Amino acid sequence: MSGHSKWHNIQKTKGAADAKRSAIFTKIAKEIIVAVKEGGGSGDPNNNSRLAAVIAKAKAANMPNDNIKRTIDKALGAGNTDNFEAVTYEGYGPGGVAVIVEALTDNRQRTAPAVRHAFDKCNGNLGAVGCVSWSFDKKGVIVIDNEEGDLDEDSVMEDALEAGAEDFQPDASVLEITTSPDDFNSVVKALEEKGYVFASAEVEMVPQNYITLSAEGDVKNMEKLIDMLEDNDDVQNVWHNWENN
Image (cartoon, rainbow, N blue to C red):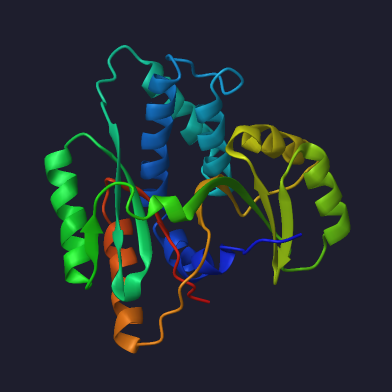
C-alpha cells in the first residue's frame, strides 16, 4: 500500500487540541447545525450523508453522544436562527507551504480580515481561491490508535479493504485508512460495527506532496500561523503540506 500519512502533521498539535476540547466541540456543533440544514433539515445520519460524516468526526473527538443529540435537536428546532456560510481561503505560509483554511461564518467581514492578518503576521500570503487546492486530494481519512500494538495490521487492512477503503498504511503507533469521499461513511460504519475505535475520522484535504522547512524562523512562523488560524472561532479546519514530524 502506498501513500503518505498525514498523522505526523496532526500528532504534534493533538495534545494542544485535547486541551481545547470545549472549543473543538463548539466547532463540531457548528458543523452539525450546517449539516442538518444543508441536508434538507434531516437529523437522521442514515438519510443525511454530511451529518453522518460530521458525527463520525465528533465521535473520534470524544464528543459525548448527549452533546451530539442536543446539537441535532437544536438544529431541528423552529427557533434556531444560526445561519453559517462555508468559506474557503487559500494561500502560502512561510517557505511556500500550501495552506487551505475552511471556515463556517455568519460574518465574512469579520472572518476574512482575521484570516488575512494571520497570513500577513506569519510571513505568508493569502491568495485567490484555487491557488493551492489543485495540489490536494479530497479523501476520507480514518486513523486507528495502535500504540499498544494490540491490533494485527493484516487483519485491520483486510477489514478496511473489505469495507471499501482505497488504501491502508501502518505508520508508527497508528493505522491509517483512506477512502474516497463517497465511501467514507460506509467504511466508517463497517469498521465501527467490527468494534474499531478511531483516533480521528473525517474527510480531509490530503496534500499530493509535502514541504520540509529548514529555517528556524520559518518553522516558528508556520507553527504560529496554524495556532492563530485554529484559535479563530470561525475556522473549522486548516490543511497544509508542511512535513513537521
